[in-house]
Length: 481
Image (cartoon, rainbow, N blue to C red; front, side, top):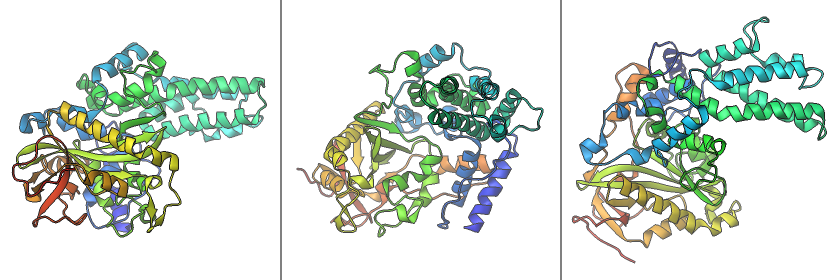
């Protein structure tokens, strides 16, 4: 672990010190993200991912740049339209919201900078943190006693994205706590609440502006930003543009069954912990300890523009996730649902006994959750121009496996599975980030894994659920309901 941690630290330092048009320069972070357990695999992918996440809150612009500039073109090379994998909302819809909210896009500066400076000054002037407001404001990292709040906010915005975000959020948190201490209707509570609300309205729009300016190359590629972040733009700006209830927009509302692509941020690295599956970063978070842990593959997935994770929520709570990617099997384009995992609260048993964590209300809608995920995957495949949809039958939830095993099936030789570009696209990103020749990373693709569950097939052959499309002419066996 020490070796991996030191390699990550060196990668972070080197990336922060490089003149690179993909990410604006920033001061080195105070601390690097915790290094994962060293499983002896994918050190370069891990270092590249950690270095990127130390500089930007979402690595999508770096991961997707080669694709947007015409490289690794799925439509040209394989006849597959990849755009549906980039987001559920159309870029044109996102652009309309940017124009409606900001008036002009891109903004030359972050409105949150001036907003934060004004808020800090209002807090000081109105002693909104109580009698000891001035000492409490010592958390503001001013370069010296004479630096104004405005100059401090401007400096952090240009040099320390993470520090600016922390200062913004910490100020909101302090105001929340102060309002909670005061009786309702107290003048200071009213004033503090107004400052807090003004800041909160700027948080997500400000994050969009910071994200745009963090990646200078976006300025030379009109339309790229809204293409990469259409879902976030819709989620964050629609309510303030009078379109909160617009059914044409795909945005989470925290009610009923909803889906979203998992963002390529630091939380992506620990998705397996929330779902208790074999990609968990912490050993204790993995519910089935007899399954080999493959957290080593997560950073390689993060750096792959065509590997996506779809999360399914019930009333705002995570319930299922589906890992999806395009493949070519038996020379046919295939939309592969490579894994479906459920949160521990959605499993019947734990260690062979009744699961004490089971959420009965969530369990009652489990079939609707799975049906929604499968339908969305079918729709995505259709929009991508892919006729065949396969689903991996192994899952960390027995009820998911039981549902998939009674559905129509198909089978194939795993040696006939082609992943477009294999790992070359990930290697190219690693090389750009680390500034060195990348070795071939390992990337788990369950469509090639015959060891997940017992199947009575010939050697190297695998059976999967056929969700859509015709069966392969080379199939060995077909099971129908």
